[in-house]
Length: 237
Ligand SMILES: *[C@@H]1O[C@H](CO)[C@@H](O)[C@H](O)[C@H]1NC(C)=O
Ligand SMILES: *[C@@H]1O[C@H](CO)[C@@H](O)[C@H](O)[C@H]1NC(C)=O
Ligand SMILES: *[C@@H]1O[C@H](CO)[C@@H](O)[C@H](O)[C@H]1NC(C)=O
View 1 (tube, rainbow, N blue to C red):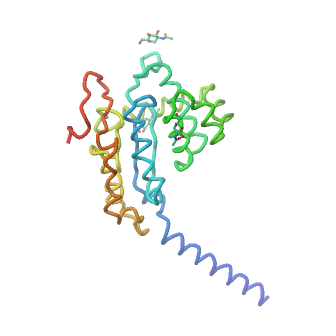
View 2 (view 1 turned 180 degrees about the vertical axis):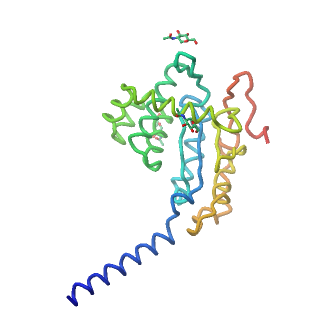
View 3 (view 1 turned 90 degrees about the horizontal axis):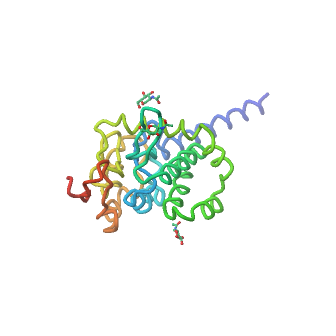
C-alpha cells in the first residue's frame, strides 16, 4: 500500500518534471511560427532557396519554433477539365507530385525537407540517389501512381490560389501568413515573429547568423507567374 502510493508519487513527480522540461524547452505546436514556402520543383530560384535558405532552419535549432509547410504547386494552372499544366512542363508536374507524396509519407518537415532538398539538388538523378539515401520508395511511388497524388496537388493548388495577397512569383514565402519579400531576412523574421514561451533558439541571438550569408540567396532571382518579368527579388522592396 505504502509502496504503491510512493510509486505513484514518484511517477507523478517524474511526470511533472517531464512536463516542466518540455514546457520550458519546446515550443508548443500552436505557438510555432508558420512558415510557408510556395514553390515549384524545377524553378532554379526555388532550388537555391531550398538549398541555401531553408537549410538554416534545420541546420540550427530554429526548427524548434518553426512550423514549415512546403506547398509544391507554384505557377502551375488547373484548367476547367482539371488538367494541371506546369510552368516548366510535364517533368515539373511529376516532381511536384513526388514531393507532395514525400510530404504525405513523412509529415515531419525535418524528414521530408531533406528528401525534397535531395531531389531539388539533382533533378536528373534524384531517383537513384535520394531513395537510396532516405528510403520511402514504395510509399512515394504508390502515392504518385494513385489518385492520392492528384488529390494532394489539388489541395496545394487550392492553398496557392487562395493566398491573400496573391503570390507574384516563386519562391513565395509567408511568415504567419504575411509575405516575406526579402528572402535573406528569413531567420530574423522567424525569430521576431515567435511569441511563444520557449526560450528563443540560439541562432536568434547570433547577429552574424540572423542574416543569410552573401550567397546566392542574396541575389536570388524569382520566377514570375508571368514569365515576361525577371526582376531581382531585392528590387521589389
Ligand atoms: C483539358 O483542357 C485543355 C485546355 O484547357 C486541353 O488542352 C486538354 O486537351 C484538355 N484535356 C482533356 C483530357 O480534355
Ligand atoms: C548534390 O548533387 C551532387 C551531384 O549532382 C552531389 O555530388 C552532392 O553531394 C549533392 N549535394 C547534396 C547536399 O545533396
Ligand atoms: C481550399 O482552401 C480553402 C482555404 O485554404 C479551404 O477552406 C477549403 O476547404 C479548400 N478546399 C478544398 C477543396 O480543398
